[in-house]
Amino acid sequence: MTTTTPGLAMTEQCEVLVVGGGLVGLSTAVFLAWHGVGTTVVERRPHELLHPRARAINPRTVELYRSVGLEEAILKGRSRVYDDRSEILYAETLTGEELRRVPMTPPAPPNGGDAVSPCPWAPIDQDKLEILVRARAEALGADVRFSTELVSLAHDETGVTATLAGGGRIRARYAIGADGHRSLVRDLLGIPATGPGGLGRTVNFVFTADLGQAMRGRHIGVAHLSEPEPGTVLLPHDGAGRWVLGIPYHPEQGQTLADFTPDRCAETVRAAAGLPGLAVTVEPQLADGTTALAYEIEGRVAQRFRAGRVFLVGDAAHVMPPTGAFGASTGIQDAHNLAWKLAAVLRGRAGDALLDTYDAERRPVADFTLRQALLQLVDRTGRPVPAEYLAEPCDYDAVVFGHTYRSAAVEAGEPLPAALPPHELTGQPGTRAPHVLVERYGLRHSILDLFGAAPVLLAAPKATEWAEAGHAAGVVTYLLDGDVQDVTGRFADVYGLTPEGAVLVRPDGFVAWRSPAGGHAELRDVVDRLLAL
View 1 (cartoon, rainbow, N blue to C red):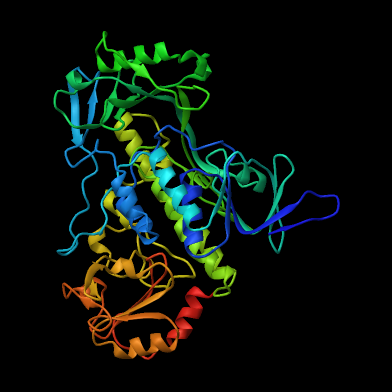
View 2 (cartoon, rainbow, N blue to C red):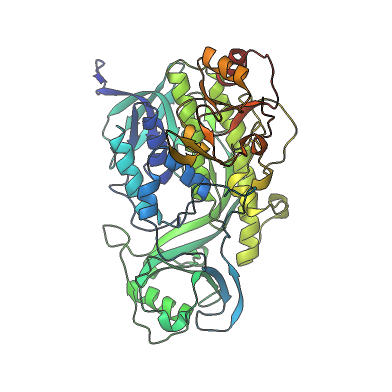
């Protein structure tokens, strides 16, 4: 829809404008469009970036993509470079003496006999993933526009007006800044960020070479090398002789990207591999033939994730070093948390206060995750990080699965730490609902597959009163061993319920409320208090 105002350019209309067409912006569009929200994405680049950047998404993030029909395509697109044998190598050169070699992130531990998640890790390069996510966003009805640059953004009580390069305008009910660590949206909103800031720069490039001699049969997922200088990182790309090399970049010493010619990049590879005569081909990363790209290693969290009708997600809201593979997944989970809340407000099912819970929930998660990533940065690379930004190390799978929420959209309960290991996720309000196997219509699947579109009440096998209350309140309700079968017989135990108890799960798969035993509370009041703020 378009409107015209005398003296002004044509103004287009949409419900939500997403600024930024990278992985998080495109994921935001998928989640919004899946909820039926009219979404427009604007991205100043002419096309997706060819560089792989993020190399994997964690099982929790795959769960979110699973809920919108993307899991199968993502798993088919996985790189065969990484598997359960993959290790992290520390050495002077790839052919040199090993300093140490440790396993890459281990698989999630068992949770009382069942796997923690129905989904695996997905080692997929970001450039490949963005193509899949963009296609899904467009299939769901999102309008994705590359070569479209935001110039300014103004918001008022009823919406947001975006001005584009060339004079076009878009009027939206809400806008989301997904435009990266140098976010124009964040700058226009005047939102500062806190954290250690810049921690160093790297130059990355993709090359093709036969490193079989240097690998010596090892399954190296990441190599931290001290040649040609400490901080050099080598990663396999696609298992077909293609690799990514990152080396420290020092513009403060007069270095420029122009210094990193293909010949110099090839010499860098030979030094890192310890193979002076190695044949190396350096590949272009941009349509203009650019081969080397500069990245800054940073640690920052915006002081607010919301300003009126504008929100920040992904690197616009927080940026963290790549160690730990937390950054992309954290941003995608931001988008998922925000999308269902915007959909509920836009459709009149909730009030504006529900949107405040986005900042209340995701900003503490970003701060916690950044601190864990910084710990991994110190451990893996030795880069100095100010002590005040470090925290006690946390179980890795707790960072992946176990972050906890405290907000007005969660029933106040027992105090919880910032994150819990998976075996301690037992249906507490503010935690991810645990995975258990269920059967419905003769098909077995995860109970997580019941979540996504709306709040869901899960009633234990003898909780018929709660099931009746759920139906009366208009809440999607499943009675275990009635509507769905508890395949393992463990639902009540895993969710911390008696056979008469019930739990209310939000569309994002987080527990909002739990009644361990039977009761007579008015469920409609619970839903209105927590999810219709």
